[in-house]
Amino acid sequence: MSVTIADVEGQTKAQRVRRAAFSGFFGSALEYYDFIIYGTAAALVFGKVFFSDMSGGAGALVSVATFGVAYVARPFGAIFWGHIGDRLGRRTALMLSIGLMGGATFLIGVLPSYGSIGLAAPILLVVLRLLQGISAGGEVPGSSSLTVEHAPDGKRAFYTAFSMSGMQLGMSVGTLVFLPLAAMPQEQLVSWGWRIPFLLSGILTLIAYLLRRNLEEPEVFKEVREEGKTDSLPIVTLLRFHWKATLRVLVCSCINVVGTIFNVFTLAYVTQNQGVSSVTMLVAVSVGNIGAAVMAPVVGIWADRFGRRPVYIIGALGASSTLFVLFNAIDSGNVFLLLIAAVLGISVFYSMAIGVGAAYYAEQFPSKVRYTGMAVGLMLGLVAAGFAPTIAQALGAGPSSWQPAVWMCVAVGILGAIAALAGPETGRKTTRELG
Image 1 (tube, rainbow, N blue to C red):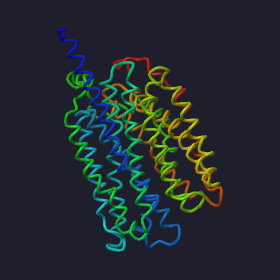
Image 2: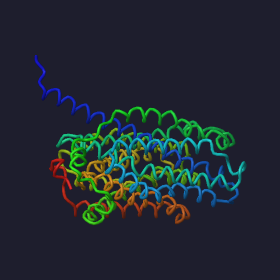
Image 3: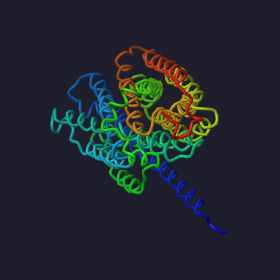
Image 4: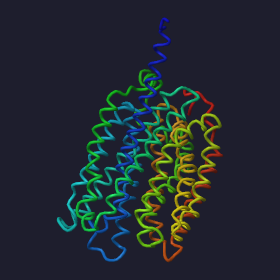
């Protein structure tokens, strides 16, 4: 059988979209592995390593607060990486951002404690956490923009969902590596055990760099650049002509509050309320996130078939309300119910909300400001997610201390559903019609 030019071109396009999807998957996994090991360490040990001069729960509170510092840096990273991605190319921005994240994470792993260098230790920790935040501002928006523009119409949500799948897998692995460490004697965990996950990031960063060397820019972006239609300041164009879409992405992406409450606040909560052990909670967090990683491509198929909005809305409302069951299970020490709530709330409902987001958010914008638009909207929304554990920790008191956290999640779920209803359904549009 002869092979036509069309067949060869078709194979090339298929290879490009698969490469883009796999790169997005692995890159997001690494970025969020790096990101979540910080959150886990902040909840479990950083109060004793870097804030040991503070008494009582103050060290734990400040330690968890440093987790949210990175979310303040994310919007600035979004503008920076969006400018590079929309001016110079998606590949360039993605290569640089992952190098910055890996380098910052590795350096946290070799950072001396407060007992060794005093106040310089927490200061350097915050600086490196800020660099992590700047880096994270470009990863998912960049990989989603690249994959959306490579993917064929009718399958955009499926292929871009791999970025979100990688994000959840990275958080799962980041949590799992702490399981054997959490079982270590406290003295060993605090002195050197917590450093192992951070040092492993150096190897993973090298693998991600090698994978991304072979990425190609999407045709639709090449056309924009070749025709001289790129903007010298994408952020200005975005805020002038696409502010409504940016606001919609911002509100919808606040659903990530559910993720940080589940991944970070629950760990801090169980250390103070002995319904279940921290090891059991780590297992539940890992199960929920692994399930979400597996479900994300399935969610993409649903979103391509039924539309972005219904999948997001069901997921947002379901994920936030299921947390009532999860925290009651923690308080009662019911491990079976805890695992059921983690699977239903995170693996199913939460994966619906975030799995569709990779395509839905990117599809709100035209190619010339797509990277900037998704990055700015998403990262501004994630500021709320970053500080949600700190707010919940500060408000909580007594046996019902989880209730403010859950009601926050319910509020963002409702607001996200309203924002999605008010926006367009992008699933039926061609890539060239988007934005």
